[in-house]
Length: 222
Image 1: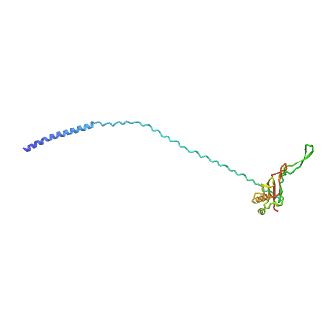
Image 2 (image 1 turned 90 degrees about the vertical axis):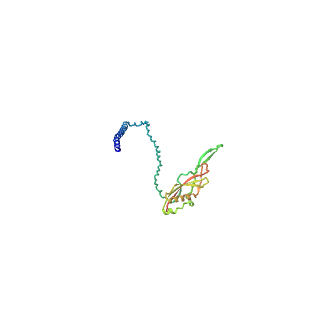
């Protein structure tokens, strides 16, 4: 009896299982169909705002420094050398300048006075000072260095004489040469001749005045 009941229960179970399996299959099919039928969602719309165009940046002009001004240098031009011939030798002697000197001149002229008497009037011209360059006490000594070198020449000097008859200055107008020995000779002549006796110069009225006079001294070896 027990066996028969168990057999009947066993016979009922297959049908129920099939029903359950069928329901599950149907449910699965419905779910799959629903998933397939579902449309994919559209992506959200993104609004794009156009950007303003970027303006190109213009480069700033570069300021170049001012060109340096060229320095103008003065052009130095050396003067040409002028060769001078040495003066010809002459005898050792002191002589007064050959220039014509103004001397006392007496001119007879007629002057009439109130008493109608005629008198001779003497007219006196101006006279420059004179130096007695031939005096022995003022003869220049020949420089020893010039004698050893055999140097000769002519020295021309202008002396200034004041109203008192004193020599106040001298100037070399013509040097005896360009060497060191010639300069010694010129100085010796100027120093010695300044000690010579002087005759003062006078104006038109015969009054003593300061004047100048030239003296030439010639150097020569014996």
